[in-house]
Amino acid sequence: MPRDRGSIKWASLMLPEHTELLKEMWLEDDIKSKPELDEQQVELLNDQLLEALGCHSPISLCVYENGAITEWSGTISSLDSQTNTVTLETTAQSVKRIAFSDICQLTFK
Image (cartoon, rainbow, N blue to C red; front, top):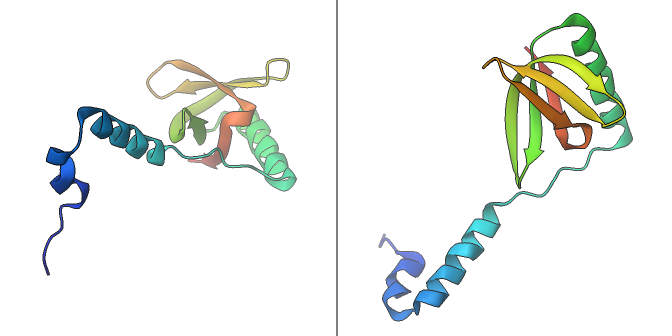
């Protein structure tokens, strides 16, 4: 089966402006939309956050940041209801503040 090079074979016929627009378009394709949680998932997440704070157990948080989902590990040191943030002490001995609305999933380790 012949191996097609896709749009690379046409690159010599394109203007530099066109190749830049194609690169931007491919980067935009990698951006993920923020997952929406329903009421039950939000309640479950709130219960898990409170349990993790009370037990000081190590957790892993999946967080939506800048079009991608990243994973942070550590223990919860505080929950701030006024600013709606979670303070997470990571395993690298640093402190990370995460907004409640950006948390997608919590798993206990």
